[in-house]
Amino acid sequence: MIFNLPMALFIPPSVFAVHLQFNLLYQFWIHTEVITSLGPLEFILNTPSHHRVHHGRNPYCIDKNYGGTLIIWDRLFGTFEAEDAKVVYGLTHPVNSFDPILLQLRPLAHIWNTFWATPGFCNKLSVLFKGPGWGPGKPRLGLPEEIPVITGKEVPYNPSVPAYLNCYAVVHFVVIMDLYIDLLATVTMLSQGTVLLRIGVMILSLTSFGLLMENRPKAGILEIIRCSVFLGIYKLGYLRSQFSLLDYSYERKQHEHEEEHKDQGRLTLLVGNHMQCSQAQMGKSLTHMTRLLRWNNRVHVWSAKKMKYRYLEEQQTCHHSTEHLHHIIILKKLAALFPLILVTYFGCWIIQIQQKSQHLILKFMCFEELYKARNILSFLCCSSDLHF
Image (cartoon, rainbow, N blue to C red):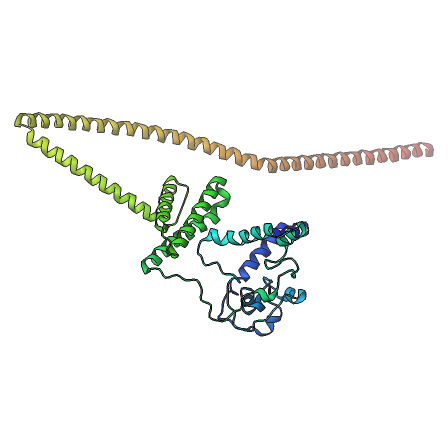
């Protein structure tokens, strides 16, 4: 992730996250020996053939084919190498151990020892930032002659263990894988302490499995400690697994066994009391039981009446609530119709005003016509007087 930090200055985090996941998904299928060559795609994509070279310990495979999805970058920067001889996988100096802690710390220990053994401040910095084979007077990645020669007879580290131990390790590894998947799914909802505790349990489990596969003398003691820690943390609720049904079945059987034991004790006590009880005591017991039954019947009758009254009250309350709800619905409908009523009333008012205005106009026109007629009549009258 350190090498990806400069991309934060230029690439949005969402784009980086999506492409990182695509890169990881793409690299899933290239870890195989089934596919030999993909023809023209070998010039562009990182194929299984190219990636086998990346994981090889052959001299021609060292520091080659770094590309994740595209191989064009290795071709541009001179780190490309095509698959030639049979690839022998692993490290140039193998670490013959299944202990994950040792596998992680041994290269760092080598760098640390080389750092203090190398004289000069600049040389010490070169130990940190140059290849693991570098030394004073050597190239950046070291001398190719110092790489161990591959004979083809290399045997992978695979100590012999009994079959039952293999089955045991596989079953417990599946449980740890289930816990790991659950941790990935719920990591955002867990506290930091719970996450660290789960990671610690997983590292302890993998370490114990590695020691078991190596037949270490004290691997059994570490496995007992691991199982005890695992069960304790699991019972406290800090671990969650899909295999919790097994725990539920175990607790249910234990509960059923305890209940069966209690029933047997009650039955034994009842039989003992019956054997010790005399005839008179049995009669008194029957009388007492009869009274209890009568009282129980009265209680049931009283409870039934009380439930009936409560039911009637609830029905009445429900009726009132229904009427109240009906009124509310009517009010809501009226409120919804109010704008329509308002618009209708306003339209009628406008129509009335328009009709009144037209009536007034007609009246005015009539008055005007009458006024003209009056003027004409007066003129005619005046003209007739003059003629006579």
